[in-house]
Image (cartoon, rainbow, N blue to C red; front, side):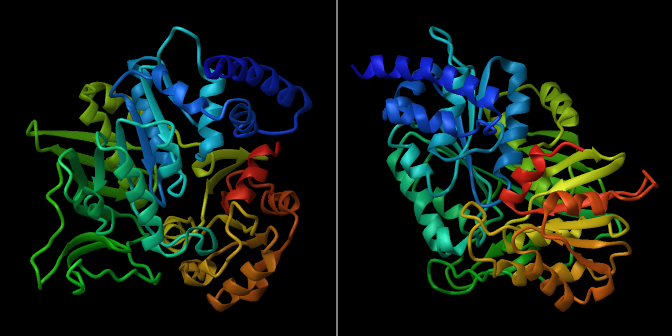
Length: 447
């Protein structure tokens, strides 16, 4: 009976998706999944057999999930048919959606790369137990939904505890992420040994840094601190320190790309890559994705070629042309992530900040005050605020020291983009910094 429901759900998924597209009612990233889970609550349990054993990987963490998963999926596409929730719908409905529209009876996916929401990962493992888990970082995010960091860490730990055969790849530079590797045998780490900056936007930031105590309740000390809590840490009291990474990264960060060198401890080999993504935060994303690909045994030449050709999508350093203007779109959603993005902003561009406070964004917008918008005080062109909380964003910019005559408030997002692109000089660049649901609106717009 359950198997019949599964195949009924697969057939229904195709018709539902077709109706969505014909009616132009949705982007189709979750509604189909919601429907198939209604028809067959165990839908994801049946999906597991459609992925080759050992080749299902989840990517979770506060920041970088979409880019890390996207880059990893891009690499693995060279190895065969893969399943990936490409648009970042990362709750149960989004993952079910991806499977429902791609499963072909009697044919397995070579790999599944599933971006997974931190809070929903433990629910996912009730149905679909992955073989591998990559954890990027843990930063304070959406306090009204996730609570404090200990709560988010608890969600992930519960998921790991449910899956005793899970192979972990953890960010060694994040002291909270490394706790997931305690008392487990199948764990590897990635982290940076050296980071150099070769651009006029340097690494300094006024954003608040989380303070972590060791498990012995003494504060951690840092030999190197790259951003937020990411770095080389140790405890003077009990001797605990950052784990030695299995994949050691060396990054040279330029204004619009990164040169990345990775030493793989197991093989003793060193690999070099060029990554066409901006900022140190994206260098971490690339290091995590490449490390997992190496862990899978993917050939260096394949990784090098695909990393070079990767283009970010859906607001993660996404490049578009709007009315002839080169436009960079970068999602912002919490203090650490926003502050890192703000380091990379071209201050000669027209800057548009689109902030909503819908459920998916988080109702609590206090993170705007903890983000380092002071980095925009030398903006040379327009700074336009838009979205539901456009006025709140404008107030934050005023206190950041941006002259009021440079700040324009236009709550309608389309009209705000038209203002930003209303320049006869098509070489004038535009930077758009949206929250999540504002990004969804912008993605649907045609100019």
